[in-house]
Image (tube, rainbow, N blue to C red; front, top):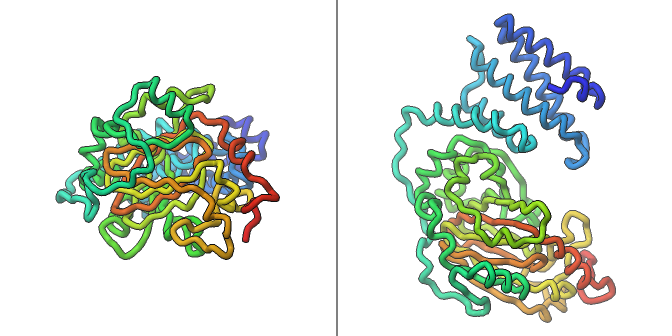
Length: 398
């Protein structure tokens, strides 16, 4: 606990909560200790939401993690408490979603222990996915080139060509390719863990929202049920639950990016049939690996940006206003000039998407994908060069 650092950012009250909580814990007064740690964590939570995320001092994230660790510890020691192990695990997961990487190891250890205790004595019946197709033997479009395990030199040439390519043979050796076919396995690894879920067809939908729920709840409500759309999308699941990351192998191709630190960002995309990611572009190289199920992807070059009518609002400048599945020719007359590429990505296949390449994705079955984002600093420049303000689709919301 950095008491001096907290005082410097106006956190004297938090320091007081901490001292009183620790003292009460040493005196075995776990009721008061719990109250103090809860008060301190709530104070930190408010500070974490006091302004733009990037502007919040990291000391509040680190302090929040420390308070949550002590709060759960004292709850476990208290003789009378209304909190359950699942309540405590939800708190730990909330902290894991909020705090910096340096603060995560003790939270990971605590989360594993609580999850194991919740699994103890449970008999889980074997569950398979529903309608998704594990094989790749379906009709595909021919527009996108397909290659089998290119060498590093060959992949570097693919990157320089600045065009999407489907790579086969990359995922089949992952433990995930076999293990994730079983929903029971996923429940055992992370069923009681809390994750953020997007509710609605896409983030452009007026009824779209987000909520936190356990993976078990998500599977029951959205994977095994065909009535509603919920999507565990663009979530750093493998950072939150390291045990899950052992099932995935980071492709060697990711070492060819142009970032200085060589970092690779992994995201999970887990959802039912019918989830949609609207037409947008990402600033980095993207390897989208399909582990379970299949998706249809529509792609457009950054050269087509003038025809794609990007939103002008800051939060959505990388997203098109056009519904590519049902384009409105009156509102977006020049969309017809854009050249579309398509592919159906099956289980075991990976799509390389260059930086700045526009893409829209629809799941054709229940689906679990992993994306690898790695060094690509040129995408915003590429798109900006083509975002001609006085040209067609020049960034004005219509």
